[in-house]
Length: 215
Image (cartoon, rainbow, N blue to C red; front, top):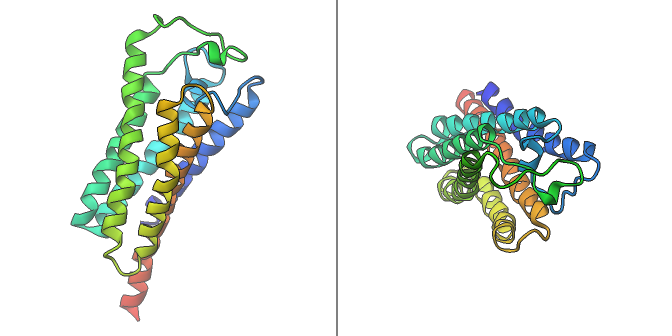
């Protein structure tokens, strides 16, 4: 349990630090308009570093999925499946990378839309998977943990994260390039942070219950 807890917390931290530091290192990168995906795009400087950050998030998703089942039992299967979908989608988006466009021209050479066309479709589908699965996981986690004494704070945090995440993803999907990158980062940072928080709390809950049992 301890190892899973560490992985669940470390993944979101490493992912967030990676895109922040990598974006900062590219002179001309505009975090308000440009996405995290562009940092791992074909031709982007340092793209393997961003892929490694995304893989660390995959590991966190899988660790939390295992914790959900081990700690919550049968009710934890639902959120575990959703975190698994998020992990699979992130792997797909990392393997099939996008391209730099004119929006990224200040620091990365743009490519035509005909470059790597199949990879771009696969990348888009992979990106959509965690974008859908993670908010649903928050909702299911809130429903499940509200019924568990000692974990009701998790339900409250899950709903608070949804309040932040849903308007951000709406802006990302509907409002073009204006603040496009920022809305994506708010969405992913909130849900990555919740992933780490959930793993930390579930692992801690097991230790609390073990302490109660010994007393």
